[in-house]
Image (cartoon, rainbow, N blue to C red; front, side):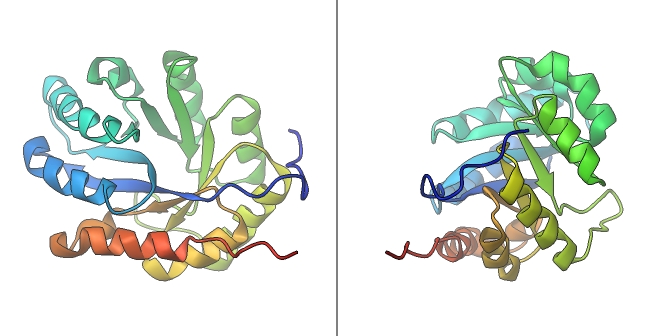
Length: 219
């Protein structure tokens, strides 16, 4: 992997990456999603689907994809790479190298293939070398367990220093946003905690966007 340019260009402003709760009713969620996307500079939405039959899952994604895409926001499915094309989604987020490897040929070259659940530096480097569109650090596993925050910061900083492939850092709370930006994350993922208070979603996203502002360069 090539190194990032050192001081040759200003660092691009980091952007938001929203993670939805498990969606069962696309019509009910479309309004809150549209309001959330209007509240900050969002690059992508990771759509997490509740268990249902395949046709229902496709219909949910097909309903929500235009809400995101109308704002130039990519809609990614959480896994389920085989449904991406029929759901008119922009790609998928895969968990672990096995799922990434199995899905890569389905998604590329036309759609986004991002990967998380990377427990070692070697796996992250391998994913990038194999063409992952981004790597994610810090998200909780299936049991809700995640590394210590200091370990996440260290992994993000290491990646930002050395690698060109974008890095998504998962923030488990609003207080983690600014430190992850400072560590060098290209995108900040806001987990489904932002949706718990339906009346404050837009305000929370706007707050996160403020915390993501990079300091002005010094002469």
